[in-house]
Image (cartoon, rainbow, N blue to C red; front, side):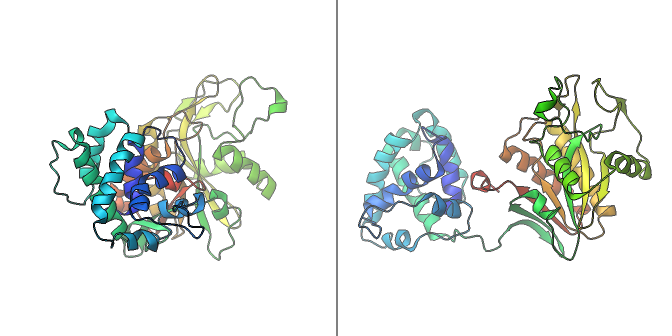
Length: 363
């Protein structure tokens, strides 16, 4: 059965305004129960969960409020909720999307006694289905028992989803063991961050990309001779260029997608991983296939060279690489690639989301 967080995320794309805040979408969806059960807050007003509480619920860091569960024990509460859901359907759901919503709800694990073929033609039946799904979801444990979220484990090997600052696990690592942090770069392993004051018509590395942020932090932390160290790493692994650059102001040699250059610092090992190639205007080009291949090369390399250290992998292809992936799409590609190659996984692999982005993700 789906928990409340999963149910709300399932409903969201079918709302008239799917871009509304999580706070609004969540509270609108539970409003049939709040109104039917006459659930009030401390000020005797209808219950409304604030942004922070909604975020905790969607991230499965908190369980369902007791007041919602208690309301389900009221006599004839389901009939009252169904009546409220009829108004919710008219006010908040997109009419043309209701057939697809029907399919999405039936794909959840909860079984209903509704006729699948007529739900979207009958508001009463859809309201009944939504009521059953809401009741089932509220009855489930919404809090993740394993925090952070472990999506696969076998013995001492596991894949875990976390959120936070990627560099916390690198430059700011204070643990006794080193971490391995993946830095997505271009195939020529550029090391120059172009600043606005330079007036360069074809900027090389953007300061806002993970690549650019890492170069800036590396300079601040005293990591020197990066070009030399990158070349030494590539030479040590016997990697030779596969093509020449299309740009006239970057390094001349390019390496295959998935190539890894290792830079070791005092408290961290960085895997600079080529996921994109610059065109003649220094726009990074990448594809879904490039992302998947890069992830596979990463876990192969970590398997043989990781020394038991944990690997921290950011979402790939969501920024300036022109792959154009959403966070969900990037996560799905990474997860699918990892699970398709579990024989290569040694130790801990962490998929790192930016702060406050997990609420939108179906794990």
